[in-house]
Length: 135
Image (cartoon, rainbow, N blue to C red; front, side, top):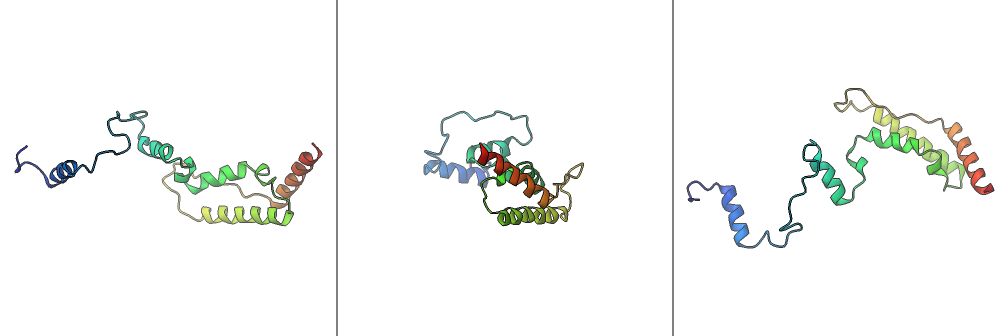
């Protein structure tokens, strides 16, 4: 390539290669992973997998809230104090209400997370703990 036709970016890359700045990079000499290359979100999916991230970390908050609600009361079973359980449930409801105030994120149908009835969930928590203690 003549110097006239070489762009600044190409020149910088060539110089970096000559200095060995690309040597010993992870994946050097290995084929590219093109699994799911037809998926428009392929890069994000591979990044999440490669970095060991929680998949919902990049999802809208409402999806994490819905998953959290699906875990009740089992996710609360480790807590022994009712007041702490109530506080965790109230905190969850505050986060749901805060999320509902945000504008929708290009979703065709708005997704909402449920508000939990704190008293009902505490009753379910008590029943779960009683079953576990009786077992």
